[in-house]
Image (cartoon, rainbow, N blue to C red; front, side, top):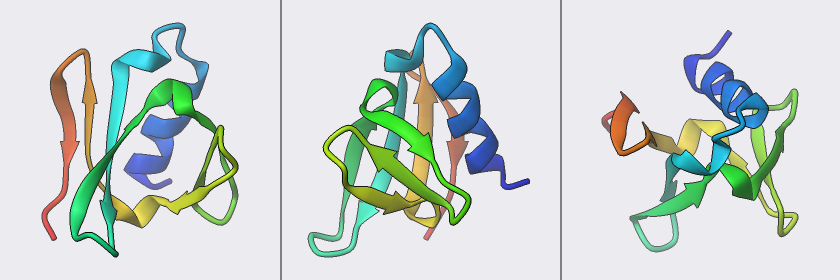
Length: 77
């Protein structure tokens, strides 16, 4: 199982999900978009984060994840 996928699933089940922050690469702006854990409703079997507003972000675009301000995953690229 993908490490990012398992962290997202853990965040979804957590009572502290708003303390998770996911940083996804925005390909249009070439910047990182900040997504709070409480903005994510699901991660589907195709590897997309489903957000409250209905948008979908592929998990391969996640570059960094923090929990309570501590980096728990960081990918280069």
